Amino acid sequence: MNALIISKNESGLRIISSLLGDEGYVAIESASTSAEAKEKLAETRFDLIVINSPLSDENGLELSVYCAEKTKASVILVVKQEKASEVFGMVDSHGVLVISKPLNRHLFHHYLIFTRAFKERMLATEQENIKLKTRLEEINIINRAKLLLIQCLSMTEQQAHRYLEKQAMNLRTSKLEISKQVIKTYDNQGFTGNKQ
Image (cartoon, rainbow, N blue to C red):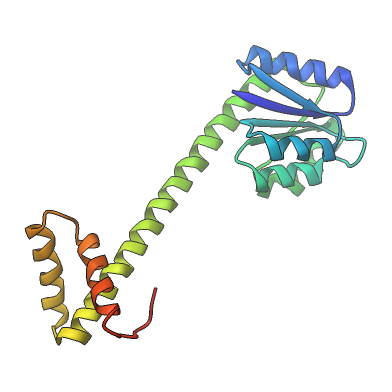
């Protein structure tokens, strides 16, 4: 696991590095400004980003939101205790976790467990969305093939459906592949229906 720590002061950097080292983070990079952090984010994919607010070129809130939106890393924003509640309300909807100073080793450990669980859940949701999108695209291709069979060969919807299934079974391939062949064949014959 690798992490990026953004902190304007060395003492904050040392404390957070030590905590992350205890948690098994072996590759830890650092930046002292938002601009420097963005350069590193463009070059490297991080599992975790910890921002020790404030930074010298901004307060850290904007950067935390940027990191949450532009990367797949878990993002932790470390702020002064008196500002924690206010900051939480500003960045929570972006998936940024807010921790107050001074950092407590025990609580930090539990926060990291939470961020890992949250990230795994988000990745699982993302994978499910990709599967659903792929399935929808496949359904659209199959429906387009059926439409071509209906338009070009005067089949009924049921006949077109059976034709695709039978061809897939006979040729030991998928209905999707047969549908792609149908589209390729009948689109070339000049059918100008709506394309997906």
